[in-house]
Structure formats: C-alpha cells, structure tokens
Image (cartoon, rainbow, N blue to C red):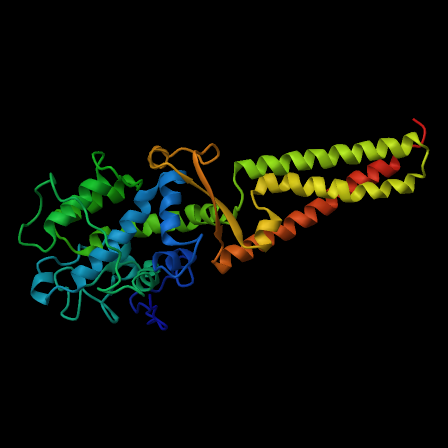
Length: 367
C-alpha cells in the first residue's frame, strides 16, 4: 500500500488551552500494521490471530478496521446523500476546546447542521485531530479493509432514508450491546452517547470516540505484548531442550569445581568453570525469553500449525497438536528487538557466570 508523505498541520484559533499529550500515531507501529506495511511475524494477519487467541480482544481491531472502511465509503457518497446524516452535536469538552472537522483534503470548522460540500467531516476535540488525520492516511476506496457486518436482525432505529442505516444499526448491536459477539469495553457514558447519536445520524463521527479509545488500548497494551510475542522464536519442545542443557551445564560446572577441590588443585584453576556457568545461565534465560540466539542469527522462527479446532477454542500454544514449521523473520523491527534480547541475554549470562565463578574460586581448598 502507498502511504501519504505529507500531512496538513492544523491549529484551532478558538482554543487557548494546550492540548493534552496523546499517544503518537504518526510513526505508530500499529498504524503501519493496519496499513499492511509490516512483514511476518508483525503482519496484520498475525496481529489478528494474536488478539483472537492470546488477548481475546479482537473487537478492538475489528471496530477500527470497520470504521476506516465505513468512513471511506461514507466519504464517497454524493453530497446530497451525506447531508441526510450530519455530524452529531459536539460534546461540552469539544465545544470548549473548539470543534474541528476533518474533511477529505483539509480541516475546517463546521456545525452539526452544516456538513459542508467538500466532503464528510468528523467533529473532534483538538487533541484527537492529528490522530484521525494520520489514521486515514494510506487508505482509499481501493485499499480499505474489507469489513462486512451481518445486517440481519438489527434494531429498527433512525431514519430509513439515511445512508448506511442498516449497517450502522448492525454496528451498534455488534459493538455496543451485550447481545453483540464483539462488545467493546468502553466507558458507559461513551457507550450511551454513541448509541444515542447513532439513532439520529449515520455520520462516521458517531463512532470516533470509541475508535480512538480502542486504538489507544491496542497501542499501549496489545502492541507491546504482540511485539514481544513476535520476537519469540522457539516452541515448547525447544524450550525444554535448552532448559535441560542449562541444568546439565550447571551440574558439570559444579562437578568440575568439586573435583578441582578434591584433587587439591589451585583455586585459580576453578576459573575454568566460567564458560559452563555462563552457558548454563544463557540456556536458562533463553527458556524465559523464548528467544534462541542461534535461531536469531539464522532469522528462524519456530511455528506450530495447530488444528483449527484448537485455534477456535483459544487454547495456549504451550501444549499444541500440530506440525512444527520453520518460518523466516522478515520484519526488521522484530529482528532488531531480537538483537536487543540477545545482547541482554549475553550480558546477564556473563554477570551470572562471573558471580558463580567467583563463588567457586572463593571456596577454601580444605573444607
């Protein structure tokens, strides 16, 4: 997909307050994932699978993808169609900070009864303006997410002549009611406001607060967990293998120390136990991080292809049934993260090895 290289910077002339600092989206890894600009194992498909089977929060990504798709389709409607669904009235906070709007090409002030002729608008608070500006970059009618909602058995609310009325009703039921299979975890006041506004208009601005809320959750919580998961390159059997090797190396170092003392060798000969202690610590820390140094050097990642029934049940891959495959790590960000873990492992193993060797050397020759 092709991204946009420049962004219009907008400032509100009606606001004198300094906007609160929000999560950066301009260089967000999450936005790159949404736009399909990342490679395996940091791709959009892998992120969806992670949310579904690990965090059980796939609804956060689903509402963002649907919103991007819906806003793009709404934006493509003729002006006469869009005017049937003006933006909802701004909240008190938005009125205080200055109601701004995002159009198809530029930002401009607007009122709920005057959506403007250039394109649809979204009424926002100042601190959220940049977020939505950047969120829509890289998406157009040709490359928006292909999201379709089940529009059957939806509540019969709102004006039937408004564009996408049945789809909006379906979105309300899916994301904002207890009956929905993908109910969002949003504040109660936000939920009530969205449901109330959706009964009056089908404008995309209705869903903007929930989309921002879900995006922030994914960026602050889900994304860091996903990146750590993506950096892991060994499965359970390999972890057990390295754990056993770590224990064996530690036992060998202990036996070597005992024999050197038993045969009255100089205590300085016990420095030879350092490689074993270091290797033991390295193996055991690899079990913790699930990141093998040798696999990292070869850009290899072990993947278990499990039965579909297991994936649907959301069971942990720590005890999978399936075939072990070796995939290639293509995403530079993941490789860089693995490099940091590798350096951390080597540093920690060296420190632990040095400490254990010092203890071995300090043991008296006769005890």
